[in-house]
Image (cartoon, rainbow, N blue to C red):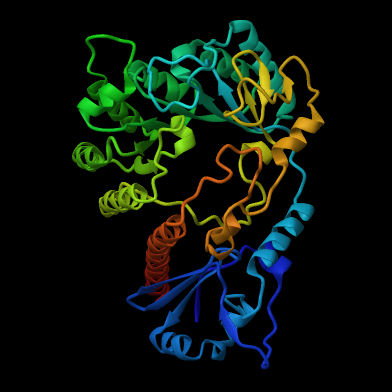
Length: 461
């Protein structure tokens, strides 16, 4: 058995080795994903983050008498038949939280430059909410708050809206204030991309330190222009956004293209994927992925039909497989650490600053559940606790899912129960693809190391 990815040292020390017991029957841990490769069989433990390769001979033993492979038992790939995998995962995370070093300052900020937008997407979860821009006065207070609360540490900012570029003046203001205070920072953005022209891209790269941006494209030209319903007349928004994506890629800014999928555009997204491939295939800075819109995201217009959903998920997989073959879709499930928080909501180093200066812990709560204001360093402890509150796994199949160690069930989250019976299988499929890529990278590094050693040897001779 060859180790391809080691468990992080802190995790390995925390969990320790499992002792072999001759009197029990062993089975594969629920969180282990397996996939065959040319050299044998890859096993990845989603709880310990360890990946190993079984040779062809070891694979035969694994398939016939897995408990004969003692290393699989000591490294938690195999566990007793009656073992409670989810309980161990929960305990593992709880202990990791207790020994985790306290966060130093607030270093991650989602800043809503405005709650207004130049598009009118029918599925927007902000429909019906007030439309207001951040004023210059509030932006200055937000900058003061960041400078005080980051405690001199580097800062990450996510520009959000509405459409953040609809009020880009406050982005300039905040970034200039951070520069003047010698605060190191970088930023990302969620935008529709319509206003990201060539001049703005230069500004984003040089002043905003923009490293990546997420842009949603919901179909080819006709469908996109209808869904987005921009307030501008006589402009081909689709072609403009594609041109702006080209500017971003040329500037070395990573672009994530999100394709929202439901019954109205499923077939068209396949054509969109082809168009994106033809236009951007040469860029190493682009990733494209699909997201199935859920019922609550569409104000009760989403995909909740048990018959339609599997058909759409099958179509989604077909498109993502093509994107992956083209090198345009990359999963990122592998994280070389134990996840101790779910998102910004239960992360003490992260806050959301709204256009009016109120602070919350999640961009889905813009008109309620405030935890503070940029005028003050005081936070509402009860509201902070509310956003951290965890519930039981919401669905029966959660406890039999390989993704379980990545899931933290926050009861305040509007997507707390957002999962479908097909999703565990989708996770396994995507994890298998990622395992193969990780193994290819391992082989590539191994080959480079061998080549370097050989060159060193020749020079010594």
